[in-house]
Every structure is written in structure tokens, then in C-alpha cells.
Length: 340
Image (cartoon, rainbow, N blue to C red):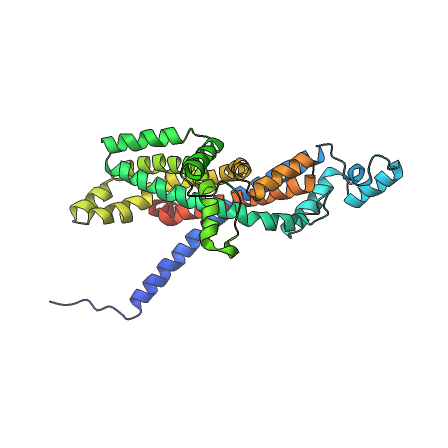
């Protein structure tokens, strides 16, 4: 019997070609995502800047007080650049913002970027922790329900996911405080401990807020993953893999999960702005010095630069997460790569 000879460089060439195709596909997906999110970034930032300009807040009057003369107020308005047209001020603000300069607070004169840099790690850590909990719990529930399609486990998971998706974040936060800080004093009811003072203490201080934020995303991921997997497990290539003798775990986690997780990943990406908005309430309940609390306090004071800077950073996080989700969808789904 004649054996086929394989040239030494053939395998390497095939691998290099495959990696090159994958890199081109990912680059194309990233460019497509940026083509969508960049106009959204411009429109959203212009909206928040215009709303700030139309809010009626006059920093010149705030700084100089009620006894200031009109000429002093005009001179101070020129100092803040408020004597320029709206589009000119927006262009200058956006150009400075992308370079990391978000201006100064009208009241404290502290750079806005410094205030955000001090608060962002708190909100970012809680949001990532909530996303991790929501993804893991939702994936376990969704896969379990899909593998027991039509059974009592499937119905129970679907009912629980529907119930928890209706619970507001502040209700979950209050319930968690009562349950795990008052009745069973396991976690602190409020406050924040930086990770520099101990990772264990830091995790204890953000666990309840993260759980409160993760309930709704976990329910959404469970429902979407269950629906996607039920349809994928009935595809011909899944049936063929089972007939060829592949193990059940390999069929589910290697073949079916890559194509069936698309809807769950897409809905998970939409919850990033939800987490940012809901963090305002949760950080208030747990007295956490995060970005949400900073935005709320600045809005109540009428500190427009701080509000605009915080919203700008929030929009950047949303845009970045949307682009990342699109790239992940192309990476995980072979059908999407073929379409690209």
C-alpha cells in the first residue's frame, strides 16, 4: 500500500494560511463594528453636550456670585468658552475629550478626568463582577434547560428566569441587604474596600452589589442560550457528530455551543449600558463611591462638565463593548466567518 508523502512545510503553510484568514475576518468584523459605533459615538456625545449647554447652568454666575457685574460675568463666560457657537464648543470639547482632557469641575476646579479616574475602578470592578456572575449562572441554567428540553427542569428554569427578569435592581439590592447583612450577617451592608487593602475584603464589599446587578442579565442569558441551543442541537451536523460517536460533552460544548451562544452573547452586550444606568441606584443603596454616584451628585449640583465627562466615558464603554461583542460573535460562530 502506497503512503502519501507530506512535505515538511505543508502543515505549517496550511496553518499560516488559516491564521491569516482568521486575522482578516476579525479585522473585517472590527472595521464593520467601528463603522457602526463611531457615528453612534458622535451623535450621543453631541446630544449630551447640547443638553448640557441648554441646561441653563451658567458657571460665570456660579463662580462670581450674585453681586458680580455684567462685564465680569461676560469676561468669565469668555474664559469658559461659552461665548462661542455651540458647534465650535462641541468640536473643541470632543477633540479635547478624545485626548483625555474633559475639562474642570465648575465647583471644585478639579480636573474631571481625575474625578472619573478615582471613581471608575469601583464601578468597573462591580460591573465586571456582575457580568461574570450573570454569564456563569445564565450559561449553567441555559445549558441545563436546553439539555432537558420539554422536561420539568426546562420549565422550572424558564419560570425562574422570567420571574427574576422582572425584579428591579434596587429591590434586589434591598432584599440582599436584608437577607445577607441583617438576617444572616455574611456580607457588609455598604461601604467600599479597595483591593489594595485586601482582595478578600474587596470582594466582600462588592459581592452583594454585583449579585443585585447580575440577576437580570443572568435571566436574559439563560433564556437566550436555552433557545439558541435547543435549535442548534437539532441541526444536521450535530446529529451527524452524535452518530459518529463523539461524546455528549464534546457535541454540546465544542460544536453546539459555538453556534448556539450567538443570541446570548448579543443580549449580554446590550446589558452593558443597562449595568451603567442601574449602577446609579445600586451604588446609592450600598453607599459605593462609584461613577454612578459621582454623576448623580454632579447632576444635583448642576456641575455640567462632570456630568458630560462621566456620560462620555460611559458611552465609550458601551461602544467598546458593542464592538467586542461583534468580534466575539464572528470568532465563535463558523457560519458568521463564512459570511464575512
